Image (tube, rainbow, N blue to C red; front, top):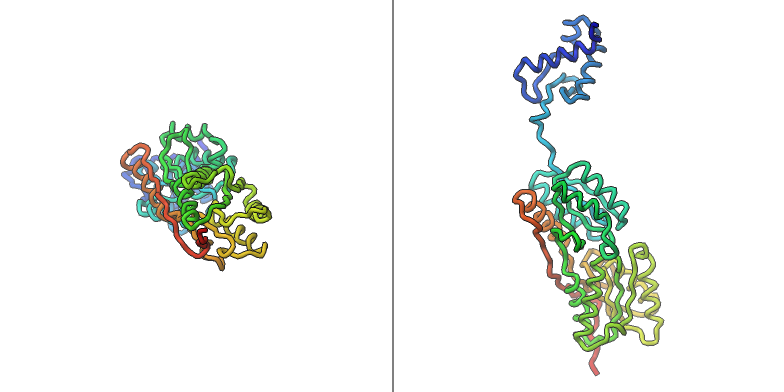
Length: 358
């Protein structure tokens, strides 16, 4: 049985490639030349070339021609995936900028995704990372203080030898490589600073579904204990991701309604500190004259309001660069579980007042 015309053209191109020593990108006979040689229509030749394109045997460029595509010699694109809580707000653009600086210097492509601290979104992105066989992953785990979400996919990453570095927090069960801030020490330093200014009635507002908040709260309590104050007697409010837009303001508002209102407050980060300062002002009080405020991250928000916040510094770009370097240590050198722990410093500004000692 005679082959279909377009199949004859396919065979012709494959034989041509087989009997000529071609390199990737070499020009093949044109549509018009082949159509004339076989006395077939150009539509028949185009149909054959479309099939060859699907098979990744050839590539075509309008106005230039048809080219041999040598899949074996095609350089595989090298990709690093980055999955963080957010991409375009707060400190995350700075972190990603640090990662990108290192990744681009290694001539890798960067694929970005965000989870909004939602384990379901994390799962979707992890599945894509595994299916696409990226060369490495930098990930900020979702709700790291609540549960070890998506453990099956993290184990699959290990089984498929896809190296990953956890950012800002990590799951202890995985014993992974990580780049984090010493949040316990940060919580201690923030509280110690207020204690050294003479404050003893210090409130705290912390996030409880991420390990950063848990460790900052532990550092807060340890500082109070070291200064002979009962940490369990402190006015402490905790919230989760879904409450971020309303809880900090209302929590501070409620604390100020107490007869024994605090003289200072430690905030989980600069983002909620802005709302806390607003609640203080809305209650007819001033920062730092009436209430002192210390927060975390030293973000752009720390200096974006009338009250310049004293804030524990998050290294942002530096942490991003370290995370990327750790990942390349795993990819290029084979170092197992490299880690980076940043010792935070307190950036002192205008939001705290020294109390006169009695």
